[in-house]
Amino acid sequence: MDKHHSNIEHAHSYTIYIWVWISLLALTGVTVAVAGINFGAFTIAAALIIASVKSYLVLTIFMHLRLEMKAFRVFVAVALLFVIISFTLLFADYSFLSLR
Picture 1 (cartoon, rainbow, N blue to C red):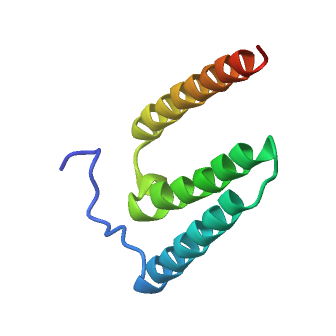
Picture 2: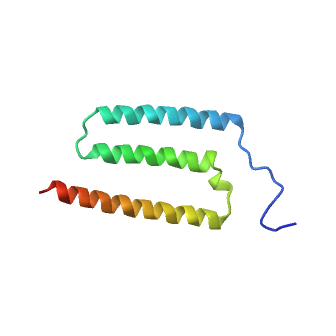
Picture 3: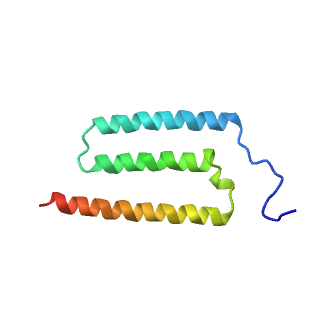
């Protein structure tokens, strides 16, 4: 038997999927509501925070990332780090251009 695979079934119950789905729908509604309200500079930050929570729910529950091997989690963390760096550089450039 391969030591990297186990015979344990890693499945959630249907109720957790339903609750996460309802949460994702509610967070989508909150995203639409935030887009309609003018928070000034915090509108984009609020939308990104809500999107981060939604992506966390999808990654941990639907994609079973919590149950994966550590190496796979490291790959996802590195990818997220590069996304954060890219967004930081993008918004730094955007804010610099808007000051002109």
